[in-house]
Length: 323
Image 1 (tube, rainbow, N blue to C red):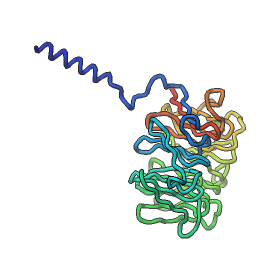
Image 2: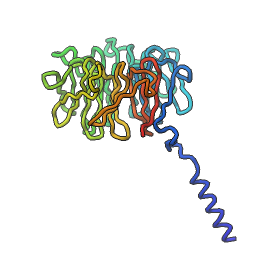
Image 3: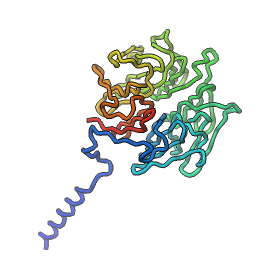
């Protein structure tokens, strides 16, 4: 009886060991593309924003058909009939309470999973929320088109408005660094908030353009800035801005998104030139001929499993796990 008990224990252990880990990466998905579009759940193929929430859901903001949520099995669409303030979803974040914030041309919507709160005005002024970021301190930062930078600390709203630089109040991107600095991409340059003061950097400080469209800090602590009108990428390293051309003389005039994959390569989402992958010494392009559904990449994230999600202009979403 003892031997039978031991054998049964071994069998049960082996069966348990063979159970599928829901977080495991299927080897068949490595270096292969998965496509999401209107044929399999998206409300529209024009994807402006992507975000992964704390529950692992992927949110995709569209140009004219609201926002779509992917729970790992299916897409669900939310639009103005459901409570969303506007059909164009430019940016998405999650606050410390787990509420999802959506920045639109018509203001901000906050969704708690069942009800919506909408904020079409701030202090009586209409605005567009172009960028959102929830920092590690629990603050939500709002980048607007006409009111500069807004910060909500859970209780009150404060504003940073640059009276000397009108273009600096048009906030297109927000990123937080490991040391807690908050960076903003504006039409008037890059702005850094170190917890005490705001510092603005422009072409006189080494930027190749004042039109900062995207910002990302890599795993080494370098900050990458993409522009809306230059072929160069700006790298902030050692307290200085460096202009880098990772595009091998390709005609790249705008970099809408930047992120890093599991191997440490930096990805740049461009208009008409696909995704550019840069390892610090050389680059390679991912175009339609390499499996991309559309050569204009407007949004990009890496999810917690390491998959790259690319939102495109006309081709919906591309999901890819690089080897």
